[in-house]
Length: 268
Image 1 (cartoon, rainbow, N blue to C red):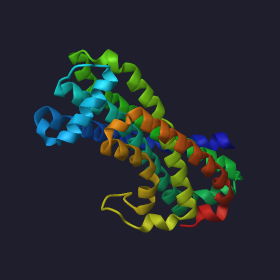
Image 2 (cartoon, rainbow, N blue to C red):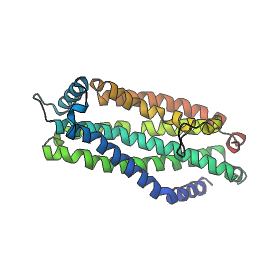
Image 3 (tube, helix red, strand yellow):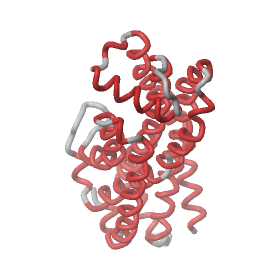
Image 4 (cartoon, one colour):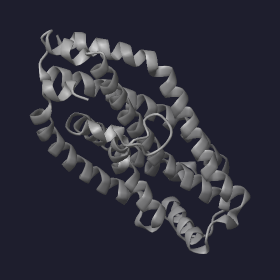
């Protein structure tokens, strides 16, 4: 039974794959370009403290002992930022995918049909998680491909790419999985336990509501910390993010089966 449910959800995902890719390309490429342009064309846009912190971080990553160019600093910062951006994009797609799935399945009575099939609560939960994580990781892969080209090409041309390689890969691996999985579980939990949060608007676009905002918050906090104090180190922040994410994921996996009931899934 579970294979049939998963196939049905994957088929639904195929219909929205183009929109996910377009969204990911636009968001990833646009933000990375906006992040790089000030440093190349208006380096004085940064405060002296921020500029010094970014230069120190870049020199530490590259193992350089002498000053490096502004272009190299911007490229390195953008490469680091792209790892966080990919994680955030995957988290946004995960949260929005779950919200849309619950809205459609509740309004169309899909959950009632699944429970009468019969399908167990566990099978439905697994199918929804697979659907969500597939959407999230597709978005993440697209963003990583686009932003890597934009941010790593200047480093290659400047001769710094070999110095950044292992650091960049480590950062991608640390941020690529735990935060999107955590956001997916938070969104699942809130859509079941407190669906009314989705009715509280936080913006004018679709999906801009309090439920999605709370779900995505854990993916935004690490980038905010890095932006406020770059000297902490991107890897250290990513490691702490993973530790916190794993702890919260375990807690949510213990809580979700307790509230994942038919009466909770069909209500809006």
